[in-house]
Image 1 (tube, rainbow, N blue to C red):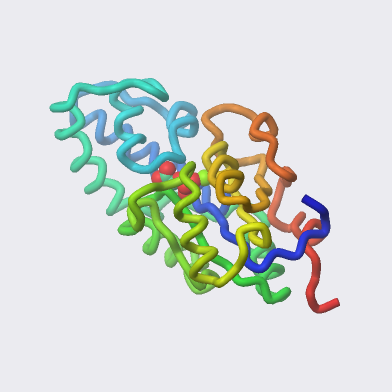
Image 2: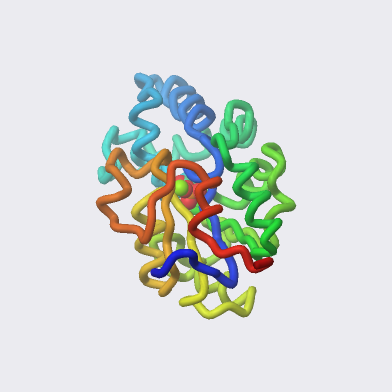
Length: 228
Ligand SMILES: O=C(O)COP(=O)(O)O
Ligand SMILES: [Mg+2]
């Protein structure tokens, strides 16, 4: 990808890119574990487990592993507890990362069309975006349960490209994890990642996105200003 890039639209991931949601997710994981009579997992572990949707997070909490399979009855019991807790704690402790508001203002000022593409379920995505005051920034929000497949499938990205009438090669994804990189590559999008998010404990540079930034304000140099 050549910089400065001038995308026809920019799709932005939610957890780990716009919002640090791990404090709320950790509270809910640990409270769920307590109600199940099990020990808490703690924030460093939960930070590694976010990014593949709420069901995977509950599975990971139960097994204590990134790729484990829990007992089916345990999962059936745990999931509704987690969903109830997270509905009440979607945005209690979650905040925008530094530079996000300024970065979004910069993209809007340049006239870029913006969409949010997350693996978070829709019932949590909308309230969270509203609570942190950025819902109106996005013309389109594609949540993790809106389509038959979530990231790393290219499906949500291609759905958004169609919605905006933009060719995938003229589109940009902005994310924090290997799922964002894989989805973008499979869709034919450009991909820029933030260094500060959740990538299952690995440096996102190992996934080889087109660029890595430490704050959204760095898009100032990477994206063209169509105003000249
Ligand atoms: O795992 C989730 O629920 C959300 O993850 P994402 O916003 O980074 O796609
Ligand atoms: Mg993310």
